[in-house]
Each structure stands twice: as structure tokens, then as C-alpha cells.
Image (tube, rainbow, N blue to C red):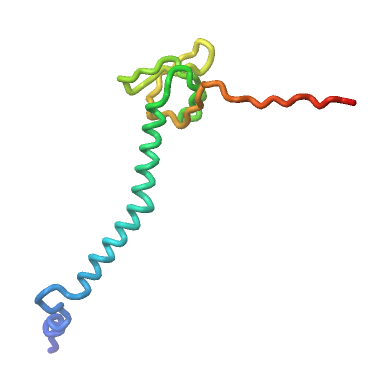
Length: 121
């Protein structure tokens, strides 16, 4: 009868120090992590920082758009709380979390370009 045990011993890896392929695997995993960090993690950190700065620069009277698409004007802004009051229509005020603001449209008057009518001869 044939035995499979000697064949299994022959296929087992050699014992001893680390093989040259082991170092290559570490380099490969390091390169994959670096690419993942540069393409996914770092841009997300920049986006989160920009959003925090936007939230910090809000003030009463700013026009905002929420993440769900509701447009409104800030009625009360609390520096020490994580929510604010948003006026979405006349006498309609809702409480919303600050981190749900998607965009801030400043209420400062913008420079408007006026066109003068052309003179007719």
C-alpha cells in the first residue's frame, strides 16, 4: 500500500529563517496601505476639516442648505451646543444639528452688476 505521508513531508515549507518572499510581502502591504492612505483617507480628512471650518464660521442670518436639501436661514446659532434653530418659512422654525449643514450661503450683500439700458438714437 502507498502512503501519502512522505509526500506531505516533501511539500511542507522548509524550516528556518524568513524567506526572501516574506520581505517582499511586507513591502507590498506597505505600498498598498500608502496608496490607500493617499487616495482615500487623506482626502476624507481634508473634506472633514473644511466642513468643520464651515460650521465654525456660520452666524445668525446666513442662508444654509441641509444635507436633506432643506433651504433656510439661521434664526439662532449656539456656540456651545451641537444644534441650531433654522427658519425655513415665515414663523416656521426647526431645530437641526450643525453637522447636517451641507452648504452655507453667506447673507452678506453681494455685489450686483447692473446693466444700463442702451441709449436709442
